Image 1 (cartoon, rainbow, N blue to C red):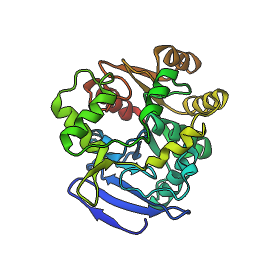
Image 2: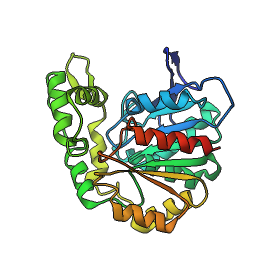
Image 3: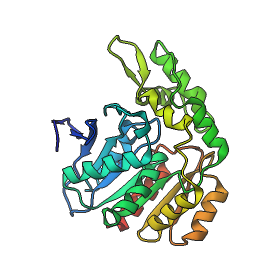
Length: 297
């Protein structure tokens, strides 16, 4: 696979060196014994990492499917890009295709949260057979301007915190509208998925701040016609489940309705009481995912 493999009690940790020498990290959850099914590849959002899938990955693996959860370059335990202009979905899709080839995975079900859904659409356009089915978590071919402005307001900006309590207060300050029912324990857990301890014992956001460079250059947003083309190519050719957070400011109800009108066969499920993006530990999200996977290849 690459430079190293380390096994924990739950998943194996693997690394792979990209063609431009970025060491990429993934969690590899073995499926429980039973009927062999296609693996599931989980892809996180813009400022997120593989830790977001801890619960749903274990839940899916318990049904018998292998689950592969990478950290996109510049996030989590993957290395930083030598060129910040490669912090773009097209580069992430290339990384992913190479990583899966190194793993010997020719075909899988993809679960993409936010930016991870965009990567899924690009991967399907480049390797049609590789994506057997898709779950898009709170993302589509369009995004509401209000939500994009909110994310651009904090993505890549420094967050100065000196304790885990301050880290929890920070993530709450920018996400509380999306998760109005979370308690202090939930915010504490979210903070530990968002920050990491640095070499000096302090806390830092668990991603490269340079991901902001393409955002400021206006390179992150694809033309609308191209985004719709990618979505239609994905959803018309394979089973597709779309999850929408009830309070989402990214995937609005009108956008979701247009998606279903364009492809009536997609399954559209609204996850109650949360915004962008569902963490997939919500009971209705998990039930929808597991039901979809029971019928997927």
